[in-house]
Length: 389
Image (cartoon, rainbow, N blue to C red; front, side):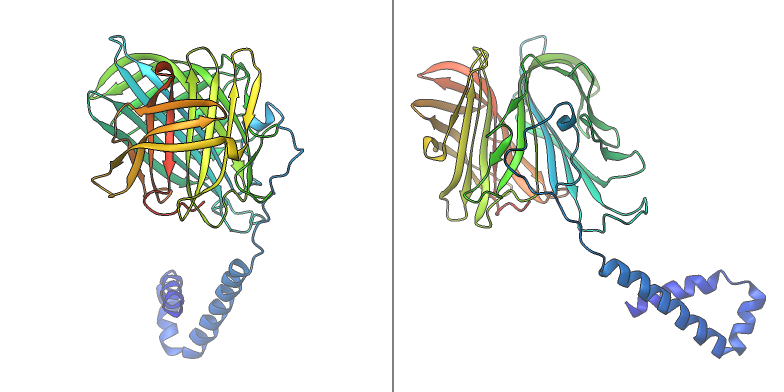
């Protein structure tokens, strides 16, 4: 720290006119007096930063129903938030493509009352990926920046998140527009709702553990109709398909003993939608689970933790991280059983340059009683090391 003060002081003196710098050589008392003054000033500045009160984040509480369109937007009073869109696309020649777009907003521990535009109060992080079976591997990219100067933001009131030239924005008509100019591909997609939002848990209050505070506010938008283009290797291709969007925010999500989670969102062929997840403990046990099935008429059935099971059927080991993922999974929700099989085993995403996590995020086909039932996306976290949020 002292060396920093010396360097900082030398820069200050470097701005003094030449005739005054000559005088400084013969006036050590002046130099000492002013150095002490600057040191005292800097100590006050750094002390105010070091001892500034940390921000007080809002808790997630039951009996707080979601309100739209307000809750489509950002919630900066909560510690963490994400918008997550995944789906299956088809090219004109009927080749399937899987895609993922995720924007995260993370509040920092810096003083929320600091008026400086440079204060890093919020961080914006984004991940994007596509999977083309013909390529045989996941193409993905990631970005992160502090919020500010209209280069990175998550706005309140309606969905509008941006990170440089990546953006996800919701129009007044409910249609989402996603523009992602990634390293190896570009996505330009329109996602149009065909169903009402699906509040998860108790009206949007979604438990994530045995303690009441281990919860999030959470809703989904299944069966989004997708049109747009994908650009790869300079070639623009029209695509269409179906997507699932999640929006979730919280302050305290996971139990300290949690390692990660397995999650699935399925657009079923009959117009129904199924969401299921389990939180895994560090010893591999189930800490919590939940599922919700909304049929095409809008009737909702929810499943308690003891009614939800994730049963691995086949594992795949990553050649990069040596993590073993149960890429083929059987899920039981009450008396219903669903079989999940990946479009490709290798759909591991390494985001250590942004969130610090490595996870498996992949397109899966779904069967029930041996018959095709739908398509979805399976997410598995905490298989390399326990996840930290």
